[in-house]
Amino acid sequence: MALAAALAAALAVVSAGCGAVEEPEAPAGGGGGNAGDKLGQLTVASAGSMRGYSREHFPHWRSTGKNCDVRDTILKRDGKDVQLSGCNVVSGRWESVYDNRSFTDPSGVDIDHTVPLANAWRSGADEWDDAKRGDFANDLTRPQLLAVSASSNRAKGDQDPSQWKPANKSYWCEYADNWVTVKHHWRLTVTSAEKSALTEMLEGCS
Image: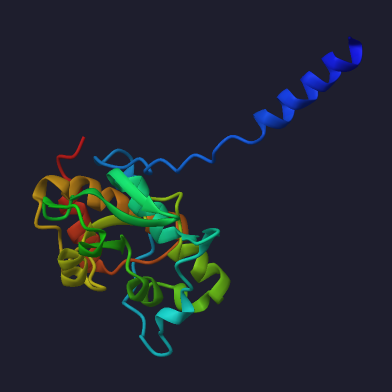
């Protein structure tokens, strides 16, 4: 009886360690909060050179096991009723906060870097090694990765908030907050025009 009880206890421990890995929750964002304080702590500098830039210096999307990668992770995190084929996302529902467009086909959805890779390069990432740039490009902890419409992502390109803002004005507070959060964590610089645009976007945000 004692041996049977010990075996049962051991099996319970093993079973407890075999639970499914949970998908990451979307990073918190939205509203001004302390974004104004963080913005004030950012170094203001002219945009750096694009010399030597390549997206290959920001390795993405990283593998997350089997045939999964970070892109799949974001599509699953930001979508509803997501259907998979293995690790590949084949359908679901996505709401693009940049332009209020809805999608059921993942081919119409891009994973946007809140702070674009080229902007990061001009803001100090040119001095990092590729490993750190890869950490930035695959950052699941900060609000750096977001599933949005492909058209809005491509219209944005590598522009900062002084050059491009989401068509959906109700998202401006969160967009500015997210931008500042990412730049503050990664210690990237802002231009004077970028800082002014962010300050205006954060005014009146709660």
